[in-house]
Length: 323
Image 1 (tube, one colour):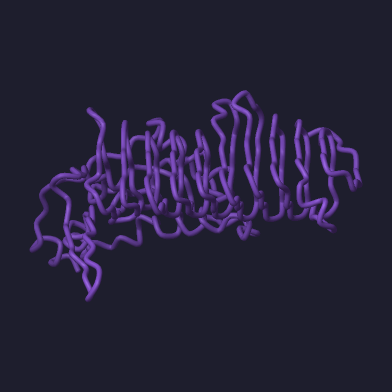
Image 2 (cartoon, one colour):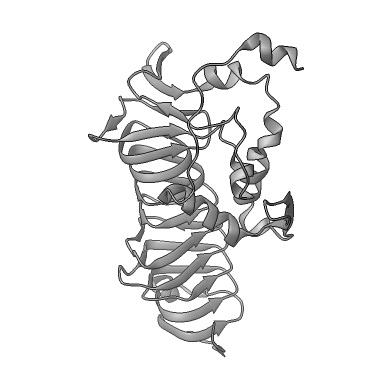
């Protein structure tokens, strides 16, 4: 990033370009609650931001504190460069980015009424009424009170009354939930990566023959549970491969290093130390930085890194004999 100019201000409408903001942008009087902040590019804000609306026209942009808007956090569809939010982002209305040429990173949770993202990496979870994600990676969960739409995503899990999926959906955790039946578009494929050897793939090594992705069929891998009390009865559908996970739990799954990788990814801004994951295929130390973890999961989503399918047959006696 180029050299930035330090700026101080007290205006209601703020435009930032090539600026370094020491501290945050927080209202000090009632009139400043209606601030509209426009970031035109090459800007670093070191503190928290509170505004009526925030619009980001271009990167590179870095916000190191928490963000809250009354109306909208909006990233222009033609924005380029890297845009990073290092702490939680919240909006009373919407968080929207349809930028296809932008490297968008959220190091923590997102909370809003409506969240629509394209090509974004979220180290935490997303909470909203309606959520629409395309070409996104969410290490945590995607939780909506009304509807979720997912297209070609890698996510931890999901939970919503209504869920629509398309293209390829990959889950990092064994189970996901909905109230109504999941509605897949024609040709949709759904996989579970809870038994994939992500550690070896991250290091560029050979996958364990005992590992692999599990093909999920929303119509077959569905378990329906009815919850009721004196006044309300509710049906919850669980899409899970937990039975398969328990069946092969006799295997030493710690060697896959999945939990270590996902935990490091979800630390976000707390990843103050660059951890070492061991030695890669070329004999070099594998450093676990945020950038490297992000690139790994995007390569996984885009198919540049291919996870082998789990062998559908195994011998319990053979596995227990090796313990």
